[in-house]
Length: 515
Image (tube, rainbow, N blue to C red; front, side):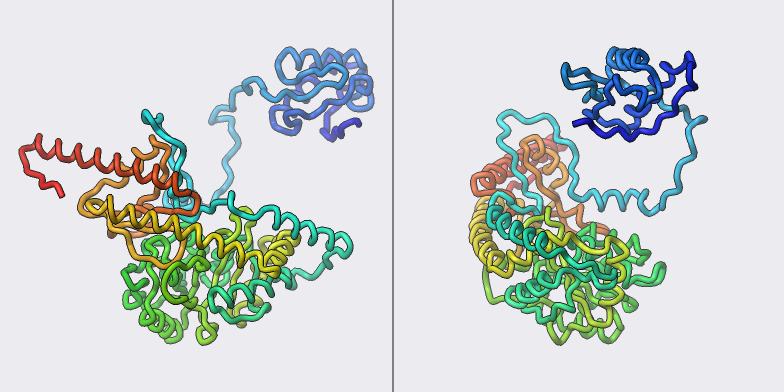
């Protein structure tokens, strides 16, 4: 089958001696600027008159020159194709001749914005240390996709696609795109059972993950330059970027063993962002006393609360802890959930349970961004929930994560007591551990990369001055053998830092008492 060729070329004047040079220059430019991509097939020379307005001999001459220069390859019996590897492009224009730069919003050029949005990107790994084992990833919020029931999800999704084939989805006005009704109904049942959130399908807006939920809430709740947004510190950096980009005045508020310090909230806070069930990254749960005080503050000050419940399905000990968004608090709390942790991040599906007074505005903002999320994906997830597969998967993962969590806690308590103190946590997929004394955890994390071990320090989660040093141990993507290997590597690194510190102290003539 003959490939399509839709590249616009300027034909040389009939009979012009410049036709060969002109055709060569235009095809070369189309290859270099990407209009003709690697593997693209060029028209056959026998049809050169129709495509290029030149004779076949001229086209053959141009193709041979491009072949000699390395821009194309010839496949016998098949044709001429753009090469996978191209020669070095011509030098870029000098600064004097370069076109003027586009006007970019300075917010996205700021170093703190780039740092927060590159939250998951780590520095390149240095050369491996001798004996470095297989990779171990302790970063939080990662999911072990190897354990997801792909076969079940594939079967349910295929059934939904066949249903769409028989009865295509109806086109609705943009204002009707709040999310697939079957999915919103399934979400209502799921969060009622797992998080005690009582709501109706009309209270739910489906989003492209939790990050889009934060962006939508920032767009609709923030008046640029006026609205004060209180955020937990330490907290989740990409969330605060969404509010900062909308023009909010961010105010970091401390977190202790009872969660957000409500008595430190700025009196003019218009929005308060919290993770009450499993604070990110410390892992503490907000006490009942603080929850009551937070709701009272929001009502008294006319503020909105954004509740990020990113991994609330995974509870291990104690009685179930209800979400902050109860029936009594439904008028002030925006509940944000996601399927990234309980299913797969690649689904890019989340949701907002919003007060009735805010839903029309949120839907309008969502429609402004992308109209709606993928209908087939929404229908597949709806069927996965409705048939009980999500509940089954969560139960299985709770058991797996519980074993990983227990091994992590036991090892930290038994072997790392002189360096780290884990924070008690009943929920989630990670454990935070605070450092004792002056421990250079930034250097430790950097050295761990030589052993293919990735881990986050607490420093990267702070907006203000870091209050405590610590490490965040995610166990979502590390199985038991990998966890043992990673903890062994961490112990070696911490011990080496202790030894180096002892030598430095001895060299300076001071005493150091070893614990």
